[in-house]
Image 1 (cartoon, rainbow, N blue to C red):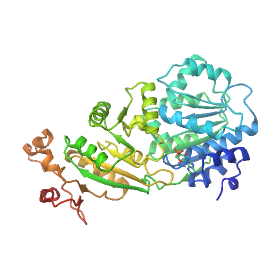
Image 2: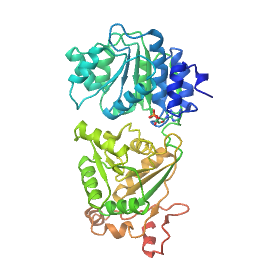
Image 3: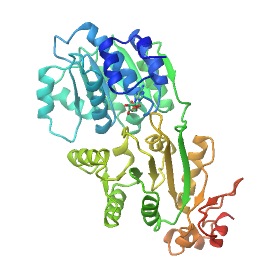
Length: 423
Ligand code: AMP
């Protein structure tokens, strides 16, 4: 299967070839012809599957065939949950459309509104937006959505998770009834199904990864470790493994800051991104990370949503996420576009309860590997949580799961101390 066979025009094929894409990804192979046919699409695809090109290429072709917008108002609206994803979709759209005369722009919050107003005034064919800032523009009368012919909800599940449903409903009321709708979501909750039922008319149902399936090429491992020893273990893994680049997830913004500072103090270039940082700081940190100026990017789930980082060999769950689906999203950042990836989870005993729903969602157990010197019970001895557990008489302590094959551990010297962790 080639891009030519999908019915794309030469100027788009040229842009695709310049990106080095030789064959369409499965979502592209299925979605591009359906969208070119004018159909609504329900796309079940994670980031990393090539879904942006799957919608951007046919949309560019459709709009190009119709010519530039005379009203200067957008004819295609892409809604995305986060600033980073919106920026990324905007960049890809501009790249794929570089040989066309269509105009695209991106609007999101956290940055000045005036430059966005100037761009909107000049006229735009494709508008990529986060819901809140889009509604600000609508409120100020700086954009009209009455000419939108194609609506795309990207990472719709994330938008719902982030509480954007009311904003989305407000936006839908501002759009013409007659339009093509494309909805992309990595997971199918009942809420997503309800939204899809309302929005989509006889959609082409395209699902490329099995529901909630983690990227197949990602090898996953759990390192049991005491809470306080986590950062030491992380620094050791980075140094021993000569890691060039890793994305590390923490549960809290504060935790992200603290960890980045610790790594920096230990000679490992690190930056943190989270919702409390200004957009300029987030953009700078991401740019430095992508350019290889800092090795480690420490992020919270929201800040990292949709991030597309080329050749990211490691994703680390410094804390396990509270919501099992977030684990899938996190590890989906590695192993992208055909590269292999590693997802490493540093799990303290009090996080074991979070591991079970994740494994249920994955449909398999994640191998456990104990790193010598970081045996959990040993490290947890002075930790408050465990003292409390023990006092209350509840069963707790180290990793209590027994599993076939047992846990492996680093083989640099026998360590009898690890044995008790598996009872
Ligand atoms: P996405 O799922 O849209 O976030 O895209 C993930 C990554 O895959 C991006 O870095 C794209 O540049 C890359 N990509 C998209 N389509 C292809 C393709 N057909 N062949 C190779 N890489 C691709």
